Amino acid sequence: MSPLVPGPGSSAQVAGLEREEALKLLGTVPWGRLAFSHQALPAIRPAHHLVDDGDIVIRMHEGAALLGRVVRSEVVAYQADEIDPGARTGWNVVVTGTATEVLDAVELARYQGLLTPWIRSKTGQVVRIRPEIVDGYRLVRAEGL
Amino acid sequence: MSPLVPGPGSSAQVAGLEREEALKLLGTVPWGRLAFSHQALPAIRPAHHLVDDGDIVIRMHEGAALLGRVVRSEVVAYQADEIDPGARTGWNVVVTGTATEVLDAVELARYQGLLTPWIRSKTGQVVRIRPEIVDGYRLVRAEGL
Image (cartoon, rainbow over all chains, first blue to last red):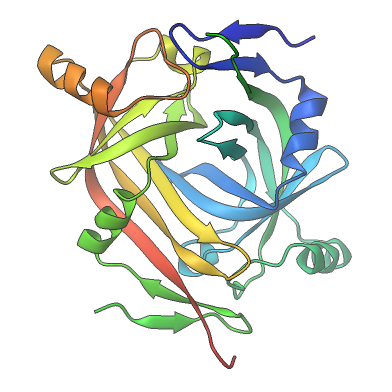
């Protein structure tokens, strides 16, 4: 059960999401942002994603910045949301987990077919994130507050 | 001058943004995502922002996760975008720089008045990011590709 936690003086309430619900919502949108450490600095890049058997599979859609970068078993965070600022409704999900590059040719071809970035990268790099922590909330319009 | 770099086999082209143009675009949208290190792990949270005299001033709009967190002179990345996936147009900007919490009462009150999160945080924490690196690109529809 997701408790409703009203923000003080706010016109939106926050309802925490269970893991399954959060991953399901993540799977309803095609893209989000990957946060990772790069040369000991925090970095963030847009990516396309899908949810496959509980894992997040992503493909970068920015050309240059990640071309030379190969992710092998490092911890990353991936975030997606769908927010209606006017209605103050929507949801936000953040997954933290271990990222590993997909190298198997059959898997890679399948994911590349499913994940078409707006800008094709030369490498077509695809990364699988095994979610360890799944955080999410839904904004619920607070009637009468 | 921003060079046009066509992606191979893509229907979108990428035009690099100059620093001034990127910050200007960032200032046209009200919110983005902050990437930072938390307990040695990458973390990412939505935030509201404004651009003030070349600095990015942000206010978290997620309640619980950042309430206890005080950012004092650490390096963070902040990202915002405005993308039309159908038209494959839009832009993406990432700023990397040093974040410092705004503690001056007058400044804090001013920024809190300008930055109204969907969910008011108890602390009303406001953070200033001094951009050291500004990366950005614009997606341009590639006619005839």
